[in-house]
Length: 142
Image (cartoon, rainbow, N blue to C red; front, side, top):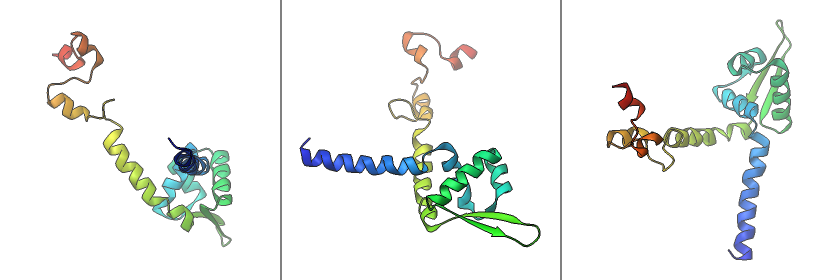
């Protein structure tokens, strides 16, 4: 790799890493994904994410500070705090869609990238023991 192409690679990788540092924690991703559905009250987010009050409060503060989430206080009785995605936060919606499409295709694939259902239908085996002449789980059950 030439020095120029290495610099470009480092810049690209750095952008990905920098982005993941902002949004990549488990709770930040969960909250951002949940807010795609629209504005929610604190307790709605707490129920839908299963986060503790302390964790959710910290994550929402972080996301607000980073510019991903708006906070709106409704002072009429009953007092309520609402959270929604900013334009910066909404810009992640297509990213979540792409991750979901990727997950649908690859999360359950075999290590070689094949669909386990296809491998099984072709008479192949996804069980490691079958390669050693041992019965697969489905064969042993028969």
